[in-house]
Image (cartoon, rainbow over all chains, first blue to last red; front, side, top):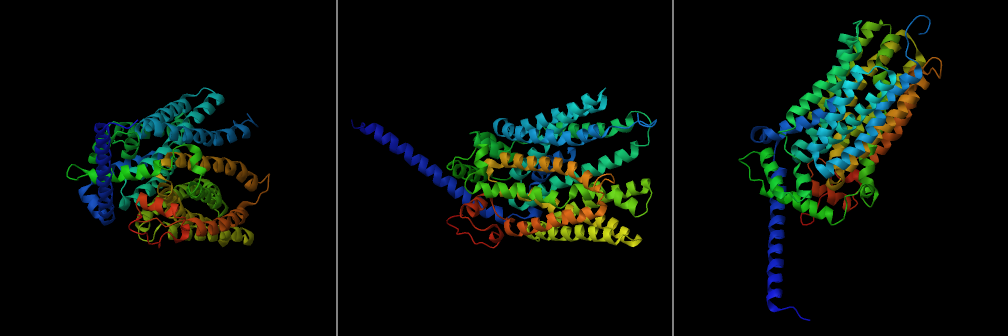
Length: 65
Length: 435
């Protein structure tokens, strides 16, 4: 039995949205990759000190060993 | 009592030395399972509870059996610590910080050893129960430190995305990168990488031994095997013995032993400057080669057996500590944090912890039989045994240690999927479309 036109149209809209979402994510991942490669240690120290602080916190788990 | 003196029977001494490693074995696997199910923060809380309970048990144990059980519980907690630390560091840190933060794990180990040696030295002269209880109490300090930070530490964004909690992952990324940073692209990277890994249906423990994951798992565990093949238990554990052979009295040799540990701390700090300048592969393989040479030198000096040769042996242990902590000690955790796939990182880290535990047990059993005067009595000639093992491990390192400096997690996945030989990964040019 064929699907009604409204169901087919609705499914195509969902597929289209998912495709747009995937393309957006892929573009975001590519942009992030470029940013990540350009990031320097000095920038992390100056602009993202929480990253250093929390990395240090987790690495101190090993003191207990 | 033996000839009027209180002594600890050898069988109990061996049991006390080994039981923590047994606990670590189970703790590592339990942590990897809990970390994937409940999150990294919940796993750390479990580790803190185990360690706190074990430390209290050690301090107040009324019998040898109770003390042994307490050490087992503590060992489980240490297995949690040693698994969750590298896992969380590698997940939180960006590419530029990843090498330094994972090398910091080894710094934690070195600082812990230094502090425990210092406390034992400081309290060892006492005649009351605090002579042995104080070092155990020190462990509570670090449990307290970790507990204080736990309510505020962000959960791993990788864990949150993998469990469908995208909005919480966004919050976590925002807390890590700061309010001024747009983290939507970083969330996209996490989702794309996880989708690619989930398409290969990798999440179970046995997946560590399937396809290209078996190479990744072998590298991740092999670097810790290399740490034992270079005789770390022998050299650092018997450094005070070499100083006594060189003519130093017991008290001074113990002070120098603390100094050797301090060299290790300094060496690990030096690793921060070489890990990204020279790369993981060059530092690791060079370190293996130098340590092999030092081990063979310790053995040769024992054959020569003159006054100056004993000083050379003692000096070699100091240089060994510096080189070990700067090179393979630090790089092993860096390579663990980069080589394993994101989907299997918890399980792979547990395998690495298990490797350390098992080889630690083997070495703690074997080395006394090689060194003790009433057994093989090899003394410094044990350097030849570990020198031979280290030489084989050095060749294996040259073949299999990859250079992953500056690579993102997706790029690393691509390199292994394309079956690029590990020794050529540093110079391999990835096709932009594929990467």
